[in-house]
Length: 226
Image 1 (cartoon, rainbow, N blue to C red):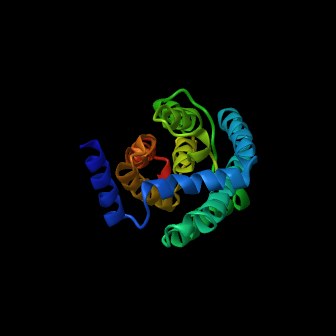
Image 2 (cartoon, rainbow, N blue to C red):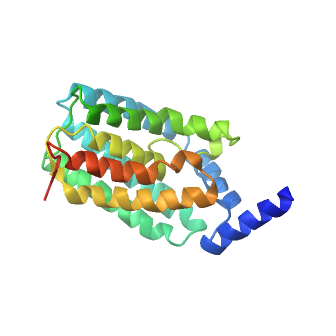
């Protein structure tokens, strides 16, 4: 009976997605092996970014780090690895590079993104999102029986990166252009849908994270501008 249920589940995934769950996780395993030790660099940049977010005054560094993570994930993960099992990954790669360019243009070149800590709900939720992306996310995956090497990794794969980005947005102190949220929210819906099909519970928070971040940024005082 269990084997039949597993087979039925696999058939459902194949009917909706152009790859199997096994292929999906094998891509992560191959990718993580190929890029090692970039994951350690990503965690180091994440820690520096968190310190800069809390301390304030390093806005261009924060924006530049987020931009680098989006560009790396778009090219290294989507184009060179995920594209081997899903042709849509090339389009995803373009979107991720575009989001990187948005952070570079708005945050680094124009200096229009300003981050900092204040003792309010938005900041605490933002900090929780960053902690979830870096620590809780891989812990959930390993608790469910996945080897660490086949898990999406912080800063170099899409879903943890989008959750991390939402957390950074919530630590904004001045309004940011609303269109900068568009691609992360679109990915939160894509990744969240795939998470249910592929049984990746750590990604189930993605749709709520996207909607919740937009709502919090639009709340008084609003941190989105047209």
